Image (cartoon, rainbow, N blue to C red):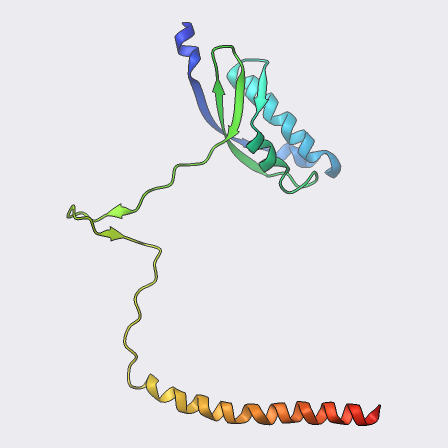
Length: 153
């Protein structure tokens, strides 16, 4: 194997940490960090493994007793044989274009525009006015109960 092939070795893995649940709660995240190192040594065939700061923060985010169940990582091996393990974020898709080739942007996540209100729904404000009439009665009852409470003191 030539040295030029080893220069840019980069692989993406999903590591399952199910066995970490077998360790005591107060040592689980420590065990996950060791499992990441073991996995990198085995798959990248080197003894020097460094964890990225962002990966470390992600692993320790929920504390010492609750590590993530699985993790997607990118392992990059440089020319010196040092493997750097960092979290893998999938690239996000940009907005889709229409098939006609125009510059119209399709936004799948947006809400449809408001449609005009049908005439049957326009009658509802009358019902709301009835409920508004009832509200002052409720407040009167609260005031009456508060006044009785003050008299009792």
